[in-house]
Image 1 (cartoon, rainbow, N blue to C red):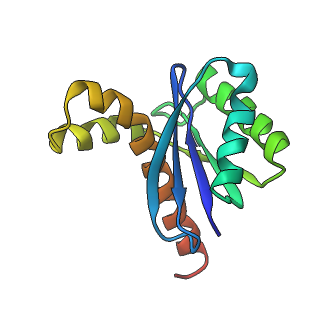
Image 2 (image 1 turned 90 degrees about the vertical axis):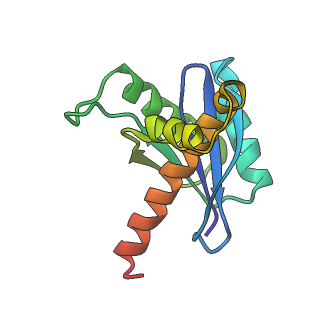
Length: 141
């Protein structure tokens, strides 16, 4: 099953997609977060183009596990995506993925401007990779 991952942000929203077997996680794009009124539809268009059968939205929890306004916004976005795509939408804990993506790009020698463009996509791929791993473990892979 092909899965689309969404890393929500206030400026950019990172996207990643799995292969049809749900094994690999590939960063694909970033969308402008604004205008927020069209964001779910723009994500739905990507889901259709990529033939996604499920969407995973990163849920930004605090380090203590609590949720703040960013998590509430992610939950609203997930609901909007569910309505726009009519696909199953899951929320998945994304703590530290943005920092890990930035670190990976830094270690890869990616320059500042390119890092800014890629970090959201890489974070989405990290969310997706973790989600796919957890789903595989649940299915006994």
